[in-house]
Image (cartoon, each protein chain N blue to C red):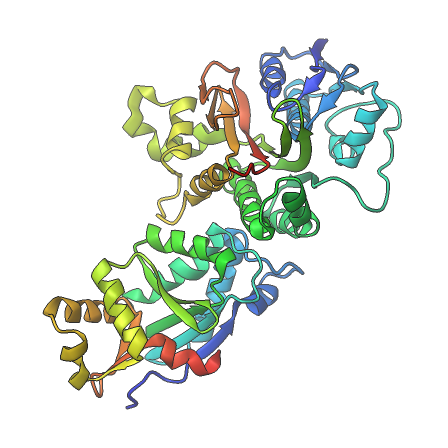
Length: 193
Length: 295
């Protein structure tokens, strides 16, 4: 068994919108459009095995409304959050200023968190993390990888270590079942950007 | 015959009177006398279409529309696509001016919203030229076209998801030199569906008891984000529209049934709540975005 999830899958939402919504329009607007795109993503993931890591690329999407953000981001995360048979991790890239508010709002509303590339090569924890989760995520993000040996140095108190485990449960950090090492999701998809 | 005197200035301030008059009309055929109209904005045009549709459906005959005498108003109605949409709603004489081909000053001509493809069409249309209008007239940043499009998308989806009927949307920029001393963009969206009370009754009326009505339904949706869908991801559209309109110091009002609720900035003297209107079907939404004033 590998220490990291299988090779990440890159999913270009801009291209999915055009393939899925049988029209020439490429904007991610209206709930049925968002639902169709989410279902297309789910179809791509259906053969991915027990674990998957997907890079959802929004960089080619010009307009993203709240209804679509709810379907393509919030409902996609919710769909897999408690799924044990398929442990799915997501990183959203191309979350630039025009999309950021919509994604932040739908994540907050559903008390979700997600890792997003908000500027080229720069990742943030979006949504509604607890402050201790946000700071724990930041430590992991800065180091990329936290081994068992590093753990007590980087996370000296128990609360922060629990917060790190909660980030794994919330699918915004990956812990290897083999080595027990914690991986920042951004590091696992960086080669695809 | 019912005669409806269309106000000389038909805009967001006067449409309630027109809609009230039609809501209170008897079942004889109607005549809409618009001969003296000198000024009309998207709210006026879309309200005229809504009022004509209600009269037609109630009276079983196309109401007659006496066209404005002003050549300028006729030309403007034509450029906004009013006559195309008025076919099948009004019976009118004469040959309205044909729309000129080529570039138009219209931000978003009157567009019927029946399904999601229409929302895509609207968003696609406003991508070209709107950014320039928002920047040059309203001094908004170049990126404002995105939240502007998101507002349009959400407000149009409100028709499809909650009205169960078709509606119209239109938008235009105006120089409110005397009224406000700056440019504004006016967006109007109206439908003839079941209205907010009709949409929310089954899910939410019980908890309001005797207080349930058009006003409480509007307050529930507008202030508290309630929706008929049990899904907690729903109900964000109106809340986020309000937030964005407030960021731009704009005004948003929604009339539904006998009530109108609004979020009004300091430059607008409209009351935030009116609950004595005649019962008109559907929902009528007006958004006014003023030019930015540097502090």
